[in-house]
Image (cartoon, rainbow, N blue to C red; front, side, top):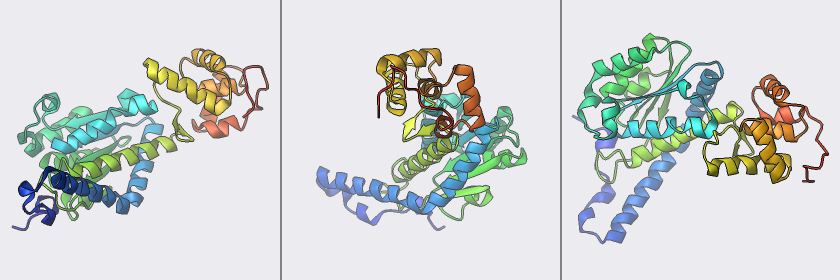
Length: 307
């Protein structure tokens, strides 16, 4: 039977074990670079997927990830960061991993073939038409991912498929297909490498653009972050200072009044009357800071510096 692209041997790998360590590393690095460049051709589809994900989160739905093996690790890396980085409510993000929690300490291969468990996981998660689900599989044929996708479609959820082989069930069945055409792996079949790198990049791009659509990015700053440690609290303070032009003392005071919300603190620093008014202003502007700021006459009080 013909080998899928992700299972083929890379021509650059011939005699790999006979080469000097630096040469081996150069080949490995080249494999990563080429894999990363494969994302370029998928940008339009990633944009469509980000719009669907943003609409889902904005309307109270959930963003659900489902995958097995290395692809599941990519899904976890993206999904678990959304709350802290962009302030997405934790109950709006679900990550389903073949093998369940046990897979996080022992990533064995068997569960990826369990189509029945995938369907059961989707049922347990209670997907509805309000949800958007992302399914990842390097091969595009992983039974867990394909079965989960089919189950999600039965429940009316919007489905996004991400795979590294074209013409495969995961891409053919999804509402939005993202094909990351990575070359054969330097270590044949080891899709934690190039395919995984491309998946990670695509997910980073998708979720970050989603955050932009949701109004959680302003001038490249994560203005909706959850500042739950000292480093992030300092970052929140710097963002308020950078955007509003206020002093550090004023920024920290506004953040305290705003219960840690950078957006609200910025609006307070800009002259908004109180937190309630700031929240209403954000709501009327789709949670976007820039148009909200444009509705406020800049405060010329003592806590501001000229920018």
